Image: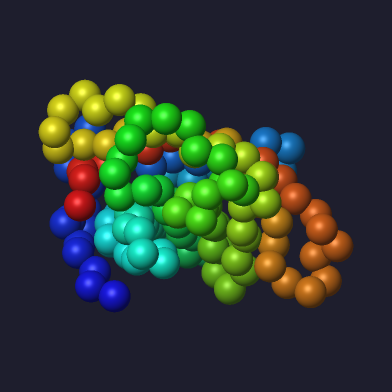
Length: 144
């Protein structure tokens, strides 16, 4: 895999935020840094956005958003497209999307991509009993 990292910190006006619905143990996520990589999935390319939140007294949290590298503005279902996925990592627990959508907005300029997500996630551990919660948020970042 040839990773292309465009920028680690945020340019002015760029952000990744998220909040959980119905889960009071999940404070609002506000990314402090991010990485963007081009990845291959089969014969196609995707962009993997990794948003990282480092806050002094809280656990390290990361959000992973995979979208088609074409960046075509539309709503993508996380269940029907191998190029589209959402993941959340809190310390050593990994939550994967089981339902929901990631929407890419039409670009405002040539430098940025923006969108939103509303996904249902489930923790990837054997004793999770299929418990899920909904995470929704918005992002605007420089393209890779």
